Structure formats: C-alpha cells, structure tokens
Length: 239
Image (cartoon, rainbow, N blue to C red; front, side, top):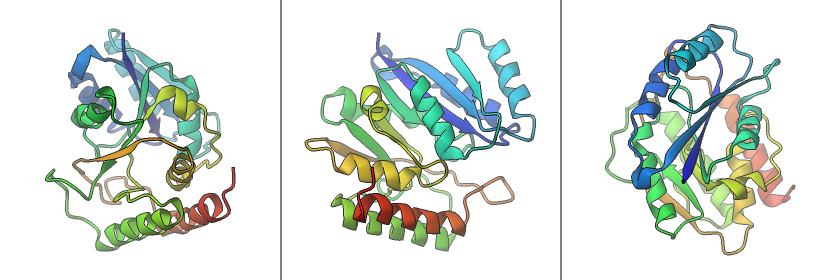
C-alpha cells in the first residue's frame, strides 16, 4: 500500500479547517494511494482545536493524526513536527486555509509515481489553472524572491514560495531543517538544490488567494526574512 502524508500546519483556522479537511477527504487518489493526514495546531487562540477534534470524531474512517504545540512556534516549526510524524511514502504540505486545492494532489504526484521526479513544486505562475486576482506587490515580491533564490541555487523555478511541495518522505526527513517561521521555503529550496542527481519538477496549479480580512497572515516582514534565508542557506550555505 502506498501512502501520501499530508502535513497541515494550523494557526487560528477554526472557521475553515473543516472545509479544507472536506476537500482532502474528497480527493480520489491515483494508483489507490491512501491518505495520512497530520494536523499540527501551532497553539491557536481560537476554536481550531475544537473544530479539529469534532471533525476527527465525525470521520473515524479518515487517518488523522493531531498534534498541538503548547507555545506558538511558527509555521516552519509546525512543518518540522508534521514531517517528523509522517510515515507515508510521499509527503505534501497543505495550508489549512482554502488557497490551494487538494484535488491537484494527483497533478503533483504524476511525475513522481511515474518515476521521473524526486521533488515536485506546484507553481502558481505557470499553466492554465484559475488564479484569484489580488495583490500586485505580493506577486512581484514572490517572483523577486524566486529569482534571487534561483541565482544561488542554479534552479529555474518559477515559484519558490509555493505551499505545494511534494517530497519522497524519507528524503525530506533526512534533511535538517532549522527555520521556524516563513523561512522554511528558501531553506528547503537551497538544501535540495545541493543534492546531486535529485530530480526536481514543477507543475502548474491553481490559486484561490485570501485577503488579509479573510485571514491571510504573511507580511512584508516575512519577505525580508526570506531574503535573509536565501543568503544564509544559498550564499553562505548554512547547514
């Protein structure tokens, strides 16, 4: 049996966590792949925990693991916890909001299950999938960070900051991760770029972005942290 571990970091997502879990549940996986769902509650201040426990009780057929941080540690730290808990053959990151569509897991899995890829990124900037029109400067910032990252990694990615990153589970668990907040994206990208003969693919995905009023959390400060991490792990090659 082949299993996909789905890591869901959650912080104050009590109003939407059940919706994303419904979407994950509804996905019909290729090749009869089973789903392992690992939710990491990063010490939410709202009713996220109650919503998760209610959903888990109402869906005993789903393989859901629940972990709670006693102190808020950041998205990266939640991902570290979820990655360490994973037991599947493949591992994908899923935000708890509704910006990314789980129906596209199979698109990301295709080059991997067909034996072509070891890592697959889902790009919001290629392909003909729907994209919500939102913030000009966010899109400029994302493309800028990707270009700077590519300069140090020698990759030709179009979307380094994407949530959807698919890995072979044993590989991602072998990498020592340090960034506890939004520096996870440039750190993991820099570190996979150093692995010789690693086959990295990109596929086009859709993007249903949120406004800040709808709960979007990333800010300009995270952009500066990303630049710092690109230099730290790319230029200075920190381990």
